[in-house]
Each structure stands twice: as structure tokens, then as C-alpha cells.
View 1: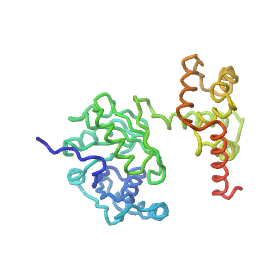
View 2: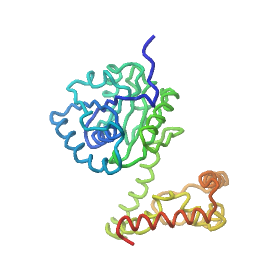
View 3: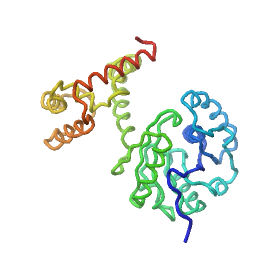
View 4: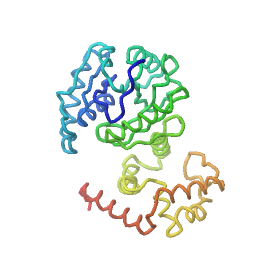
Amino acid sequence: MGAERVAPADVRTVACVGAGVIGGGWVAYFLARGYRVVAWDPAADAEQRLRHLVDRAWPALTELGLAEGASIDNLTYEAELADAVAEADVVQESAPEELELKRRLLADIDAVTPPQVVISSSTSGFGMTEMQVNCAHPERTVVAHPFNPPYLIPLVEVVGGEQTAADVVAWTSEFFRLAGKSVITMDREVPGFIANRLQEALWREALHMVAAGEATVEQIDQSITDGPGLRWPIQGPCLTFHLAGGQGGMAHMLDHFGPSLQAPWTRLESTELTTELRDAMVEGCEREAGDRSIDDLVAERDRGVIAVLRSLGRA
């Protein structure tokens, strides 16, 4: 019998493979959460750059609050990949977004990492299905997609590939929750995951408007920072539109404004507002709202927007 996988709550050592901006951000975050971190990167100057990044991130992490026992001194840098993963309870891979590189590196990690250890990838666009093809143990490979900088932005999107075991996805989600992250466990793979697809839609429309002379870069940024962006930290786009329907919520909003989906406002093709889609949106908002009424949500939103404005010195 081989060694058993440690419980998510018992993880003590994290191996970070790749020590660039994302990998280094992970190193800083895990150190701040009290883990021992062992890092590896093939670049000649990687250790120097990594330690500089951690030093620069540490004041912000200290302000947020360090876990008991957290210390920069808990970072070890290894010259060999096998040494970096030898005692790991979990591995976080953060190599550049090149598919063949990811495939080779994940296979290399898989070959030298103890078989019970989960191997997680920080990829921002590739599915694990297309990355795990050369792994001898693809069942323990999973995506845990962070946002830059990983030491500050809470969200992590977790999703397995076709060969990933369900218990590995569950283990990974629980580990990151216990590590202090806000975790979305996705039901299925989709290119770019959830948040990046939403960011990309906004970004593409911004580029269209600049290219067509319809808006300047400054106007586009102001339209978000002084407009809908103030609401999104408190309630996402779905609950925001839920409130746009007044006391009727999402149902009223879709029934009233649904036809405008066909208006040529953006260069993105609109999906058809079927009865099934309408009902899914309404039911989803009701689940998210829980026992909060429309009035409760409005008050929550207003308090949150005021807090954001005040924290930024804009109110």
C-alpha cells in the first residue's frame, strides 16, 4: 500500500513549480497562510526574482493578517524539480501559458511526485483534459486558476479534466477553502473558465469602441470605476440586474428588458432568451438572495458602494 493523501486540513508543505509573477504570488500567499513552501523554477535568476517578489508582497500580507507561524523563512528553493516535490502535500504548477510546455512539465511533475499528492495547475485558459495527456497519473491533476496577484485576489476556480478523479476535485476545493480562498468548483470545463470569459467579453468590447473612435481609453476606464464597477464588489452582475427589476427582481427585468438583448449594443452575439434560460436566471437569483428581500439587497448594495467610495477617498 502506498502512502495515503493527507487531509486538506493537514497540508503543511506546498511545492510551487514555476516562480514567476503567478507562481511567486502563490509562494507569498502560502507563506502568509503558515505553510512551508518549496519552490522550483528552471530560470537561472528565478530564486532572486522570487525572493524579491515575496519581500514586496509581505507588507500587504502583513496588513491583511498573517497566520500563526507564518514567516518568509519558511521558503526553501531547490535546484532540482524532484527535490522540490519530494516532501510536498500538494503541488501548484504555474508555468507560462504554452500548451506543449504545460504538457511536458505536468508529466515531469507527475513522474517525480509521490503518487498520492494532488498536482494543481494555475493555467488561465487551458483545460486539464488537454494538459494531462502525457501524465502517468492524470487522475490526480486538476486546475486551480487564481487571479493576479494570487496573494491578494481571493478567487480560485477549480475544475478537473476528463481523467481527473472526482475526489481530487473535491480535495482541491476544500484545501483552497481552508487556505483562505474563495473557491468556485466548476461543474465542467470551459475555455477560459468563468471569470476570464467575463473579463474577455468586456475587454473585447472596449477594444472595439477604441478602434471605432466611439470611446477613449480614459472614458472606458471611468465608465467602470465610477459606474457598475462600484457595485460588483458587493453583488455580481446577476444580482445587480436582479435589483434592476425592482420588487419584481430578475423575472421582471428579463420580461421587461429581454427584447433589448437583440439590440446591436455590442459586437458579441446575444444568446436566445429562451423560457429555460429565463427561468434559470430567475431561480439562480432567488437561490443567491436566499432569505434576503429586494429591500435587504438594496440596503446591502448601498452600504457596500458607500464603503468602497470612502475607502478610495471618493466620498
